[in-house]
Image (cartoon, rainbow, N blue to C red; front, side, top):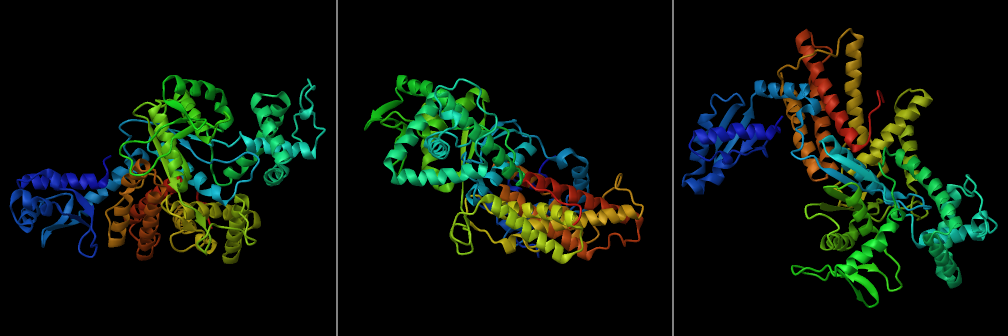
Length: 588
């Protein structure tokens, strides 16, 4: 099913051709003066110079050709050459009925099904998730879901930070606390314990303490670096202890991500590609891509068109150690070999633009990717407090993501219990669902690259452009449908009817924008477009609801048509919130 504006533009294009002009001039847009018309076409303005005619004359001739149009009930030329258009209710009904009957509301399959890897999350092992991890997780999850919905094969990868000095610091921190652990006995040949000698809380305390000490104690840092070396060389006890750290951390990460409905297909980390680094380095040297500069191995990535300095991409430090660049390039190499993706999308802080520019240029120059492989980086802004600075706890620390989620759930529970009678367990369940909608919608409704203010009062409000408002609208629809069933009505086999009033027509006109929005959001990896759409759709429904008798409509056929419209609206809204990563309760 074609996008709605394309259908309208086809009709307008035919009218231009019938009047003797190029049909390409018939592009339709939504009206910027809804008080005058519903849609408009400015093609006559564009064609005036080409055809040496006043635009108003061209517009008038085209309007005449639309007199008997089944698409437009009104088409009027307006100075200096606009075409003001009003949609036919019969044609709108036809399109809405087709949409309701079609899989995915008539969304067309992509011309080419792509294999896409989305690299998001970016959590570090043995460290707690904090508020700064929110954006990568929820934006990446939504992009994954949107692209899947439109028909692509999408793989989500957590890409853990599980290698390097941070691991050595944790190992040394554990040794300081428990020096007699069997993992540090180099003569031990038996099976290591299945149970980890630490909890996630202890792990999360060990790292910052060990890191802080290493900055003040050179000898301690040297021991941590030695522990890192031993781990990377494969010393058996160190690898076993590292695996325990991985098991405990990943289990906790899965729990925290799951509370935001974030799910990864792959839990790969930097450690997974260490085996590829020697081969990759040797290849870069052999092919002449890499050279020594000030003792380090680098690849020059500057281009003639650069207007600012782009430093070389460092592959190995002067001491032979690898870097994040090295690991990310090896990860690209592994992904190309294992999955052959058409596109790899990275989610990271927007301040890392130079880093990703270097890595992507290096991957292309060294031919780690095919020429047609699309490497895309989406840089996101920061989550700020009401003071405009990065969001902090009351005592000035970085808030744990787990704490942020729980505080939002508690606030939502308070509001739900305050406004209605509901059993405790049910209230908690509803509060959890609505709180997640508040967090996700509050983030995703902003364009990814922009910073935004985290305002708990605003985000948890049931009014305005918020997740709870969207859910409240869906629950209102569900409540009407439930009452209709209680009155003996059936929800199957209903037929949509022609709009009887302007608010009903406006709701239908918003519904038919679904395909355009979803395709655009997928193409541009832009969840905020879905948010903007469902806010518009929720407003259109609520305006319609307040102006229309639904269950009280005396005419049975008309009432069934209204119920059919509610079903379609509910289904479109629930589809949209699903690709954003949250769901609606049955009642609130």
